[in-house]
Amino acid sequence: KQEVTQIPAALSVPEGENLVLNCSFTDSAIYNLQWFRQDPGKGLTSLLLIQSSQREQTSGRLNASLDKSSGRSTLYIAASQPGDSATYLCAVPNTGNQFYFGTGTSLTVIP
Amino acid sequence: DAGVTQSPTHLIKTRGQQVTLRCSPKSGHDTVSWYQQALGQGPQFIFQYYEEEERQRGNFPDRFSGHQFPNYSSELNVNALLLGDSALYLCASSFPGASSYNEQFFGPGTRLTVL
Image (tube, rainbow over the protein chains, first blue to last red):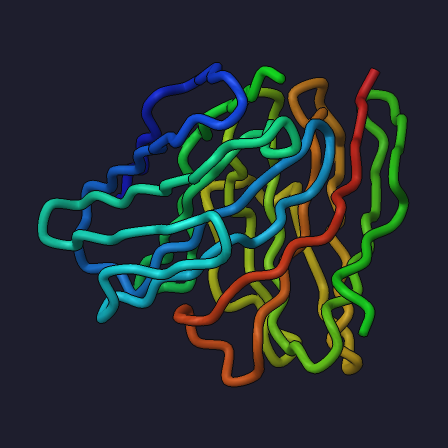
């Protein structure tokens, strides 16, 4: 069974700082990895999808990397803003269409 | 283009009751997955529907059942509710062809409280 871990569980940074969120998975035979944002009590918003053949994906101030062999992905957020405050989740599918999520990193950006 | 929609937004039930949650996928999507998210946890996969059939199921008891309609919308039914079923229930849809390689799009969720 795939196990997904996210470190740190919580992070508090001053506005303007660059930061890195980490996601690790135990089974490297993945098809893709998806990063999501979740505001309190709300649904998930897709941020980035990295296919297994890719090493990086970028969207605005966000950059996600994937290293399948080591079972790791990172989400880099540049020049953080208070509006970035949310919980960030990563998810990977197995061969049977079941997606496994980490428990998330709760980010607070202090103005 | 409407995204994934879910109804109702909130629901309060008592133990032993039954509940039905509804999901309409994003336009053009034919695959619907359901997740349960307890407070402070990541979403847990319940099951996925494709072509009106359950294609994959997570580690949930038979009290959890579902259905997909010809228009690709879906229902999640939970029987004999327990206090532990209180959670945010999320629906996700993905593109036609419905491989596991496709990006998932989530709805806003239904908050179920069991008293």
